[in-house]
Length: 316
Image (cartoon, rainbow, N blue to C red):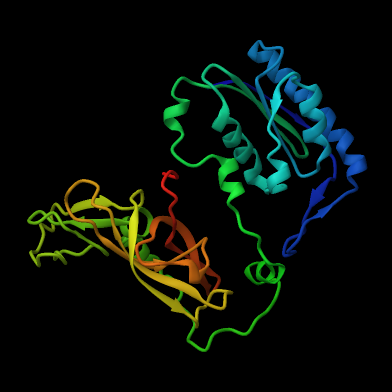
């Protein structure tokens, strides 16, 4: 529950990027850190006062420079317990405040308080009280557990994925650019991974169709049954390694996976790229979950759809 919020604007040139530039620029943090720390302390002081608190149980401070998190956490709300997620990730940009808040909620107990402070061109402070349902709301793996399982990324691979290193493309035609009409008409399949539920046998047809792929019985076009598969676990039944991929990789794994039968009415099947895993590590029988990712870009249009990533058993 949000108890209070406060903001402080500071007109300081600390980080900027001109239109069309790939990388941002930063001013010397020995100058900007003092300004951001002062803004952060003021915003935190006002937020705590509005919340009627002298201190909090957890502090999460997000900033592109290291000084504001260290100094604001040490003085603005002592004796709070500060989570040093920055040591594991560095700065993740606009996502960093949310990442730090999620990490704090992984360990916070009901009734405890959290100060979330973002220092950039000033500061914004938010004070939360953890609700009674926080334990039931923890559906995924903790942030720290996910970071502990991360794999090192080679510098060359990073440059290829960021488009900073040109490599020869595959000997295959470029993927067609997505079109707006079919994306709109099939929005349920594209964005919610919806399959068609058969009224006769209960089977699930993917992509959705008026005729059941399991029993061949046509469905009712006026009231088609729908079921979303995006939150289900799938089991790999086939693996193919694509060595002519349009992605900046030497090869990727294309898998066919059957979704678990969660409600006793057929599973549904998906053919998709495997992601967040080496292609040679994908095996038949592996458990995976859908994630919405970018497939490719053609004619300056990004095409997004579902890929499958390994599932460890507790990252719902």
